[in-house]
Length: 113
Length: 114
Image (cartoon, rainbow over all chains, first blue to last red; front, top):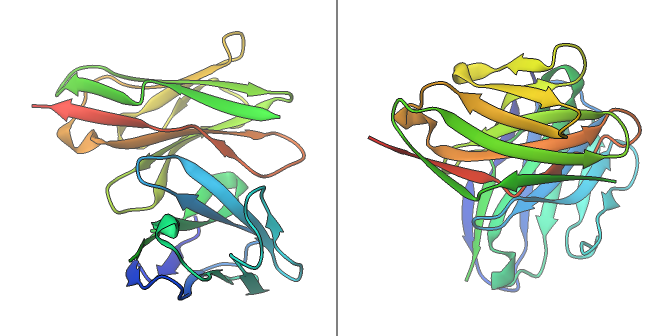
């Protein structure tokens, strides 16, 4: 199965600033997903990112707040913009590999102070 | 539309006891079903999956799950719990056609007592 390198693993940020999270996959994949996991909660899908097209956002998530780039088939970034303490969460990227299910990055633990 | 219900946010067992984590799903088309484990400060790791074929699926770390269409269930079991099994477990469903987006359950925290 694919291996995903997600960076940073954790960060503490000041409110009002932005953080960009990177995911690098060791093989080409069509679809990448970005999730938010709040403490003690399940995964909430933020958006689906396909290479060469704009990301598709789920209800409650907007591009201005969570801009996503997908420049090629092995890389994607998620930016959390103008952060507030409510954005404190774990952010996960994931890829769809039918034969192996969904593979996840190790997550980015974000704390906004 | 699809959804997943995991019964019990916490399950507590003794080491060596049977582990049973419950998952019920709803799906308008034949489902693909998954169980994932998440250890503290880590991402999700696939335990096992059902797509087609044999309804009893064996996964890693001694876990298995059985797809029961009549009961719309995909419960996860392990005959004998180890301390290292303590983690968060997520059940997920995806339609076999159309959308590739999975739906995850709320998760069940497995606690293993010595």
